[in-house]
Amino acid sequence: MLNPFFLQGSSGEQNLIQDLINEQLKMYGVEIYYLPRLYLTQKTIIKEVIESAFENAYPIEAYVESYDGYSDNPTILSKFGIQALNEVTLTISQERFETYITPLVKKQANIRLATRPKEGDLVYFPLGDRLFEIKYVEHEKPFYQLQKNYTYQLKCELFRYEDEVIDTGVDEIDDTLSAEEYIDGAQDITTIVGNIKVLNLVGAASTATAQTGLVNGAIQYIRVINRGGGYLSTPRVAISSAPAGGKTGIATALMIEGIVVCNDNVNPLSKSVQSVSLVNPGYGYTIAPKIKFVGGGGSGAAATSVISNNAVGFVTITNGGGGYFFSPRITFTNQIFLSGVTTVSASATAIVSAAGSITSILVTNAGTGYSVAPTIVIAGSGSTSTGTFQFNEIVTGSISGTTARVRNWSSVTNILQVYKSTGEFKIGEQIVGSASSASYTLKSADEFYASSNYGSNYDIQTEADKIVDFSEKNPFGMP
Image (tube, rainbow, N blue to C red):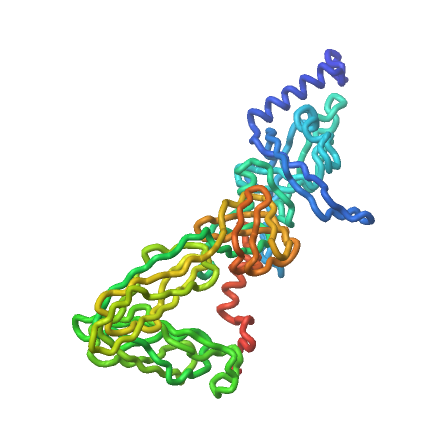
C-alpha cells in the first residue's frame, strides 16, 4: 500500500521534490550556458534551415550524467577527416528553465520554441571548453514521480560548425571558434572551426626608411649569362668566399616560368633564372668572385660578377613602414662621386611582406665611385588603411560589394579571417568594417579550410603532399 501520509501528487509534495532537485543540481552540478538557436532563413517546402544564429547565452546549472567523462564514442577516420564523436548527457531543472530562460527568449524573433529546451540548440560545456548540440530532449525521466516531471535530460553531441553566426558577447564562448596557432609557410594563422577566407591586407600607411655605407671590393652586380631550365624551386646562389678580412657576398635568384622553348623547360611548371640580386654586396674582393647555382632540381644556369670600389654596402632597414601594396620605388639621392674615376649610380628593389611593410632591400647594382654614402629614399605607400576590425562585424568590399563576417583580426600581421562570404573579394579594393569603420586595402585572398581541435584534415593533407603533391601538373615525374 502507498504511504497514507502522502497525497501522492499534491502541489506541496511536488514543490518539495522540485526544490530538492534544484538544490542537488546547484551542489553537484556544473554551470553551463544554454544557447537558443535563432532560425533566420529556411526553405519553405522541407523546412530546411539555411541560416541560423546564436546571439544569447544563459548560464544554468546542470548535472553531468557521465560521471567518468564523455560517453564512450569512437573517433572515426572518414573521407571528411578525423572526427571525434564525443557525447555528453546533462540534466537540468524544468522549473529553472521555465522560470528563468523561457521568459527571456519567448518574445525574441526567430525563436521556434521557448517553453522547453529544443533539439538544435547549443550547450557550452566549460570543463572542456566545448560547444555541444542538443540532439534529443528527454522529459520523462524520472517517470512521473508524484505525478509530475522535474528535469530535462539533454543528450548532446559535439557541435559541428556550419557557418552559423555565434556572437553571444561571452568571450569564453565566442573564442571557442579559435583554436591553437600553427605556422603555414610564412604566415601565422589561428585555426578556426569551419571554412574561412584569409585576407592579407595592407597595413596602416607609414614610410619606410633605410641607410647604408660605402665599401671597397664589393660585388657591384651579377649578370646572368644563361638562364638554364628545369628548376622546380629557386636554386641557391653560391658565391666564392672573400679574401681574409673581407665579407662574402650574399645573393638571391629571381625565377621566371612559362619558357617552354628551352629543352630543359618542356614541363611548363619548371622555371629558369631570370636575374640575381644582392642581399649583401660583401667587401674585400680583389678579383670578381665565381657564381654558381646549387639545387632547385634544374641545370644550366650560369652567371658572372663584377666588383667595384666605393660602392654601396649592406642596406639596413631602420623602419619597415607600412601600407605598401606594391614594391615602392627606391632612389639614391645626395650622390657625391669621386673625381677622375668611373662612376655608376646604385639601384635597388624592395621586398614587401604580406603585412605591407618592407622586410628587405635587394641591391641590383651597388654602384661605384662614391665619395660619401648616398641617401636612400623609399617612396611612400599612399595607403589609407586604418582602424581595428571587430569580431563578427560585417565587412564589405568597396568594389565587389562582397560581404563577410569577421572571425579574427591581427593588427601585427594584418591578416583578416572572415566567414559567411557572399562572393569573391577583388584584389586592391578597400575592405571596410560596418561597425568599426576600419578600412584596409586587400593584397591577396586565400580560401582556407581550417583544422580544429576535433579534426586533422589539414595535418593529413600536409603529410600526404610530402608523398605525392598533386598541385604539380605531373607529380610522378617529368614532363
